[in-house]
Length: 201
Image: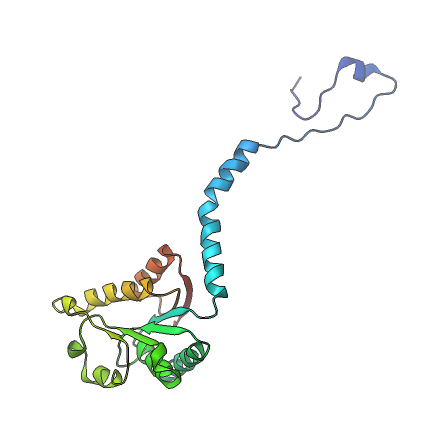
């Protein structure tokens, strides 16, 4: 005879003329609920932080992405950046002769140059002449002479992290093969930033 965990039947119940249905009992594992709550605490905190960031009226928004963009995508990024600045947000990006960063700079400069911060991977003097021309009139530029001897790829990786550390929200335009930008997105996730990713392929 198998043991029943939810119903208990006695001999007197078996042979009684007026036998009554036995009610089922449900076992609730209180200890398990406590452990689930502890495991989900980090997730709850992360969601609360993201919600608080979304509800802010003015945010620090980092915009980074690929240099290889068609003109239509650049125009969309420029329009998006202009709208974000008009809403009171500060845009943080890096230098670039074309692509995402260049479009973000143009969009912010159209709306309010004081709401734009450009963090360079190295110094202005190490940027191509067209990038230097684009940065004329930008009031808030951060240079890094200490990275002058680094390769541009290594300096850019460090620069992306600095940009992300300074923002509440990251908007990134990239392809699935953009390793450096994928690393930047992963870094933003570790920092519990609000992230919007646009894939170009």
